[in-house]
Length: 160
Ligand code: ZN
Image (cartoon, rainbow, N blue to C red; front, top):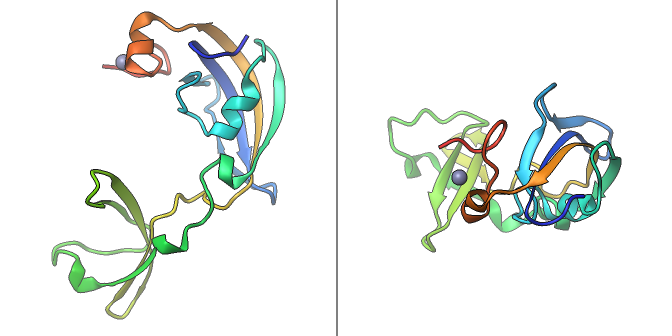
């Protein structure tokens, strides 16, 4: 049964509210995660508690329990001159910026217009209601080492 301290393997398909497929696990290569460590979005994690191997579930996750609401403060208009000269800015490129609080904020270039560069620091799936189709493939106890590291090891997991 899925609960904290279990290493869980799931097949999943993620769709938005329009039914468009956004992401899915690779065929024959389930997503492996350590339950209870927020490696998957909170709204999905809590809905998987109690499931057994072979169980299937549709889970709808509102933005606040997924990748967050869109934060317009993270829509930023800046100047090309802000960037190093050797950087070739193109739409869709992303980069991390130190916010000064020891946290790295990822920004994506969404538009280039004259000398202006428009950036978005929101997760690409912010503001979206997420629709997951999940199938539980395997469940096992986490090892002491996995609990210490906070992630799953082995096939599909973290390699050191
Ligand atoms: Zn590790």
